[in-house]
Image 1 (cartoon, rainbow, N blue to C red):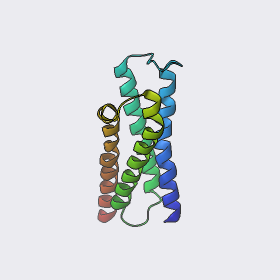
Image 2: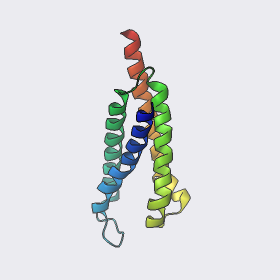
Image 3: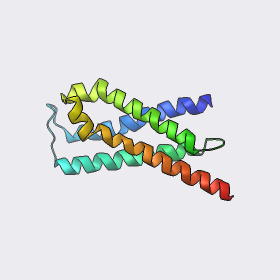
Length: 130
C-alpha cells in the first residue's frame, strides 16, 4: 500500500506537470498567448485527459482488491495536488484572480473524479463477472 501511495502522489504531480509543460510553448516570454484560445484550451483538455487516464490505468494494474474506492481517493489527492500547485505557481504567474481561475481552469480538474470513478467501476464490475 505504501508503494501505491508514493506512486499516487508522484502521478498526481505528473498530471499537473505534463499539461503545464505542454502549455509553455503556447505563450510568449512576456506571457501572451500565441495561438487561438480555443485551440489552446482544447489542447489542454486533451493532454490532461490523456495524461490522467493513462496514469489511472497504470495505477489500476497495481491495486489489490476493490479498485473503485482507491481510484476515487486517488482522484481527490490529485485534485488537491493540482489545485495546490496552481495556487503556488500558475495563479501568481498568470496574475489571475481566484474566481477567474476556478471558472476557467480549476473546476475542470473535477473531471478527474469522473474518469477515475468510471475506470474503477468498470474494472470492479469486470472482476466481479470473472
